[in-house]
Amino acid sequence: MIRSVVTGTGSALPAQRVSNAELAERVDTSDEWIVERTGIRFRHIAAAHETTATLAADAARAAIAAAGIEAQAIDLIVLATATPDQTFPATATKVQAMLGIDDCVAFDVAAVCSGFLYAVQVADAMLRTGVHHRALVIGAETFSRLLDWEDRTTCVLFGDGAGAIVLEGREAEGDTPRGILSTRLHADGRHNGLLYVDGGPSTTGTVGKLRMKGKEVFRHAVVNLASVMGESLELAGLTADDVDWVVPHQANARILDATARKLGLPPEKVVVTVDIHANTSAASVPLALDVATRDGRIQPGDIVVLEAMGGGFTWGAAVVRW
Ligand code: UT7
Image 1: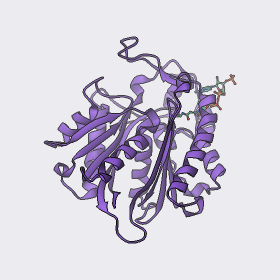
Image 2: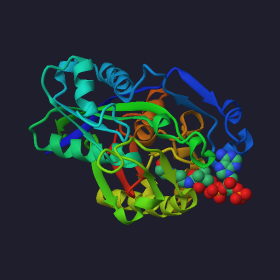
Image 3: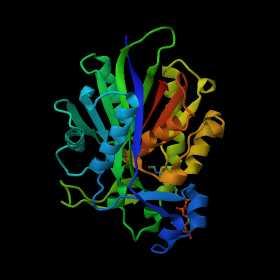
């Protein structure tokens, strides 16, 4: 039986870091409001020369180096984004060219903030067929380009960045093999109007701006995330007591707290980076994963639960033995 094992992580952030106080100089908000309601203190904002593809390629290079392989060894790139460089071709193909990979399968996945979880499930399924051997799974976004900087209810919440993992298909060995143990995804398209972009190539012919009814999204997020984490643990034959780390989508510190409480997980098992990255949509889970792997919190053999929820709605979770 083949399992998809995480062999490397990487991340990249735009050089420009913006504090709440700096934001309060251009928007009617305050550091106090943002910290109290969301836990966010900083976000990184892409400069003109930084794009979803350049951030994704930087994160991918770091993940490939951590995996100790050559870029040419990658035969699959699945890139989750809602902010592609171009409507087409897929940003994944641009990243392939930037990495100098001559031939591989490369495509984008669009599931907004849950995009990385969707990409992980797709890559895992493709690796387990045995046709592909080494995948780059990337979450990369430049949400600053979709923000309405006049709308204080949304523009303070998001940031730009990218995270990546290398997944390798390996024959499972022993009773507790490493790798992805379960994945579970959901979508409910009836909630389009609660979190969306008001433009697109086939409707307005424009890129559009992000719109969100935050309170309603918050309510759905806590219920859906707790439930899908429970489902993914059950699929893996585990319980909340077995979990070493939860690496959640970083939208709001209050959502992270409420979700962990619902599952009876102590807050110290939850990796929190929303304070330094804000909400980076599909990039947030792999960004947080890279932070907690490089600082030594996540160790080989640990049970790690990834989870995310976003526009659509879409939501999902994955259980990994690191
Ligand atoms: O990534 C996809 C998932 N997305 C999410 O999970 C986001 C989920 N939602 C949230 O995180 C929260 O709902 C928000 C952070 C967006 C908002 O927090 P809230 O506690 O639900 O606040 P609210 O929308 O009820 O607004 C409270 C007050 C309002 O004033 P009034 O009507 O009480 O006078 C807002 O106008 O806060 C005001 N407000 C602000 N004040 C200062 C809204 N935005 C701001 C702001 N600065 N940036």
